[in-house]
Length: 448
Image (cartoon, rainbow, N blue to C red; front, top):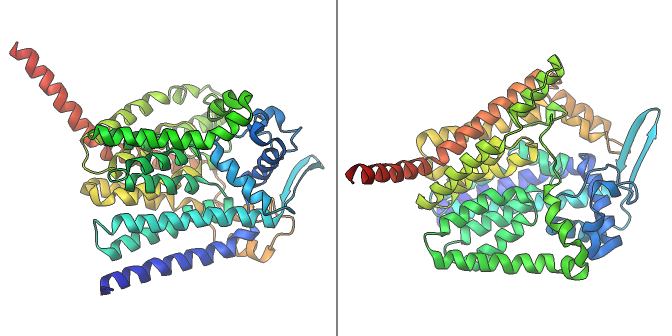
């Protein structure tokens, strides 16, 4: 083994051990509100089997005994994972009740632990994939540092180790898909299908990946074949076992609703939405016009990403442009959406311009601030029946404990500005391609 490789592996292993130890310290004692809801979804799957999607809407919350009336919004992969975790956690429970005018939700620590262990395992897989991809284009120790930055990133740790959300479960197969796209397009297509049928927020970078492959039509064709076969295998048990659920499967991702004010502002990561919500609360005016047409900048930014993919020699910059465009424009951006953005920014870093690298670095750093500003100790007692109060006090002592809405409005505005800058800088190849095409058209017209 070369000395450089040994050093790189030492950095990678040390980062994973340190990140895993930190997660192990946090995992059993904290949970966000989604993890109790996930237990409700898992029970609904085990109760209704392939007809799960017929009972996945918010109107079934009371009958299915979910703690919240939130619908299931995702593809089949995640609920199948939830069902498997539930099967090995038979004693898991959720308690939810009203008392003294307050609503209480508590969940068992065995469920919290098992589901977060899965999320953290996928975080580790993403870190290893980042190292495996980058070691081919930069020095191995640099690739290891990049993997460590991801695995030790405060927002990444917060999502898998404290709150508990599964974007990294969709991210890992996408990164593998993009890495294999050129040499193994069928496998790549299957992995992209798994990614998007886990969480549909990965659709923009998948679309950019397809556009990148268009230059080799045969590879693009095999990619689509692999994607369709994988999608069939995943959806077939639901569609064939319960044909009436096909419509519900297709409509589930559309349940996010019309654009509206994003409460609470502390959890809103689109600056325009946060500003609209804040202005509405402070003045009473109607500011939905600021976000009602979010899809216009989204379409423009995605078009740039697709054009840059056609022109690009690598797949990572267009994927970053597409995903950054999504989180820049979409009206409801949650903190978990930042996890894929951090990973894709690291993967695209070697190919970006100096300005692009500066913007990507600023985005990675700025997204790391929020877990220190927000009083994360809240999640260590609000849903935990018997909190570790010493840990709660420790975390409160090491948090900025910022509650002011104004701070989070400014924070999200800066984050959104950085996302726009990242999408434009990464998609600049699309601008050049479009400018070249328009120039040729103008020259052709003036010549005739």
